[in-house]
Image (tube, rainbow, N blue to C red; front, side, top):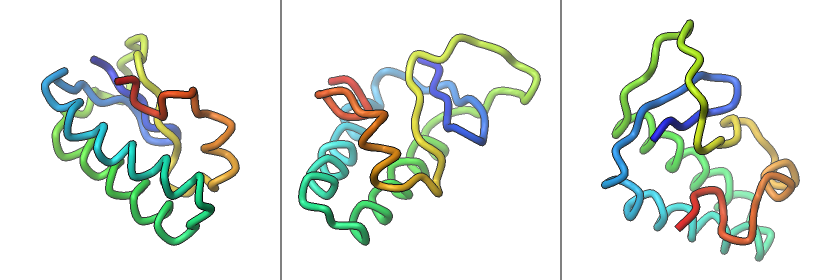
Length: 92
């Protein structure tokens, strides 16, 4: 699966990593629902770091269709709320 991190580029990720990423996504949803800005920021960075760690960055000139788009590291809670589906950032 190809994942785009807004403002950074694309990462190729194996489907086998989604269970681990879904845990962070669930945490992020809880923090957003409770308005926990500090927790939201911490978990968003943890999610993006995990995607970078587990995935392989595609070259900057690669233009693959992204199956998943994640917010930029500096995205606000309100910006991420606007991006979310009912299932969170990572579809389960």
